[in-house]
Amino acid sequence: MLRTHTCGELRISHVNQTVTLTGWVQRLRDKGSILWIDLRDRYGITQLVFEEGKTDSALILLAKTLGREFVIEAEGLVAERLSKNDKLPTGDVELRVTKLNILNSAKVPPFTIEDESDGGDELRMKYRYLDLRRTPVRENLLLRHKMARQTRAYLDSLNFVEVETPVLIKSTPEGARDFVVPSRIHPGEFYALPQSPQTFKQLLMVSGFDRYYQIVRCFRDEDLRADRQPEFTQIDCEMAFVTQEDILNTFEGLVRHLFKAVKGIELSSVSRMTYADAMKFYGSDKPDTRFEMKFVELKNNTPSSPLEGRVREVFSSRVLDLTSGKNFNVFDSAELVVGICAKGCAEYTRKQLDELTDFVKRPQVGAKGLVYVQYRSDGTFKSSVDKFYTADELKKWAEAFQAQPGDLMLIMAGDATATRKQLNELRLLMGEKLGLRDKNKFAALWVLDFPLLEWNEETKRYHAMHHPFTSPKQEDIPLLETEPGKVRANAYDMVLNGSEIGGGSIRIHDRATQQLMFRKLGFTDEEAKKQFGFLMEAFEYGAPPHGGIAFGFDRLCALFGGSDSIRDFIAFPKNNAGRDTMIDTPSTISEEQLKELGLIIKP
Ligand code: ASP
Image 1 (tube, rainbow, N blue to C red):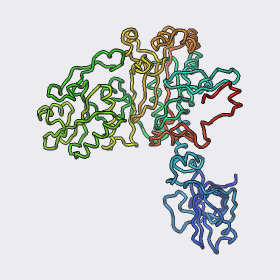
Image 2 (spheres, rainbow, N blue to C red):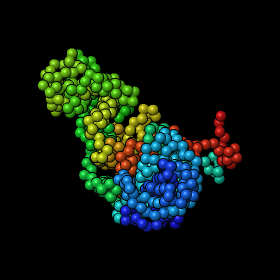
Image 3 (cartoon, rainbow, N blue to C red):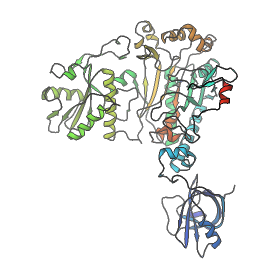
Image 4 (cartoon, rainbow, N blue to C red):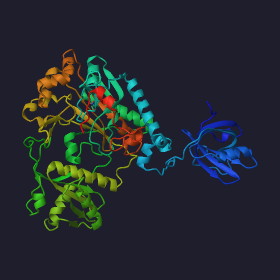
């Protein structure tokens, strides 16, 4: 190699050695008689010095021609620094340069390539290859690399086999739109890019592979919300001859292994919660369990059976009402009155309370309002509904909330499903405000027993909540005919700090059940056969019971890296509009290509 050492390597023990370094000029400080250069490579930064009287003057002149991001090769003598820099691992030494070779010049970069850059998002994405020179960005990718290696190490140790599956396939429904690729050889026909390798991994189980995994790219053409990528990576896994319990244990093991090996953290065991409880107590199927602040219901008037044509609740209601009949119409007319108790927040000012109300009224949250009850330290109550409720009545609420003097109760009301969702947002906000969502603390949770089907108002039919290959709970199968919305699935999600990091299910493995499932989803037998005939046929040739899971690898890396953005953990991500501004895509194709593909673009 052109170098003898990296820029992160030299220590006091190297003093008096002659070494050669290569790298990029991060910074030049020209003090006239002395010139310092911070030389950077992937491994670190080393200071180079050129000093009048000690360095050859021609060399000094050459050094003065260098600019930021020039690529150089420098030979010199390692010397102990007079003023040491304890922020740099190499900060005890510097290189007194004796030979300098400019390997390449560089234009002035469009933003500073340092830990804290002055470049905005757009600019850094357009010049992503420069952004990737920055230490924090590089470290994210190194973390990702470590995560992938440790994933493989764990799964390999358990006899999983990594098998590649095709990218040009036919639609696999995971609930999103397919990206499609026109076929030139078969005009008018299209491939779909996989939303996941779902059907292939199931076929591998039929083939007897028994334990499969793949760190694999998936493609979903969804409307882009913040922090979604049209292409993303999954740790995709499948096992044969297993129960749900086996899968939960195996993949809890994976996550614990990753925490241990990558972060040195002993993750406490993954707790479990049913979907019904998650919705009831947290208003979310991915509750952040780093903190409690469970929902408390003051009134629950939800019907015990799903409303006509709509999945309301998968749990039955219990009659409860601590609010009605006091002329407070908001609560009287509500299906659900539910709240949270914010410990120690009773002394919130009017302004702080107004801010909370404004928060829940934001269109993204969509609530009509917020009721508060301050349980003051002197044991008295002050609330926004004092006109309607006596202190005794508020006391009963406080008991329901297990509130103590000093606590603040925040209560919302309305349609059950919507209100729970809104209160979930408020709970997360309060968790944030109270410092309960520490990025360095990790709480993992299995959410179990998801509903099999989900009613879609737009299409007026049931959709698979997970995907159509998920098996219903044996005991719920009769409900498929009578109350499909109440059928529970053998499906599970893993949630980490309020983010869904993985999900899977025990699959259907016989043709009859699979066919029934397609019918429930509104497929005619013809359509089902056309799209998934291959899978149903495979089930007739000795399909073992099987199940699996997939983890969102980008998200997992982001969580491990303490970031909210998956983009930071992808080398070349798309922006929020699904564009790669660096290579400038999507882009048009030539007339000739269109013609070859038999495509006409409508104006
Ligand atoms: N294919 C599923 C998904 O992408 C995961 C699974 O069921 O294994 O979400």
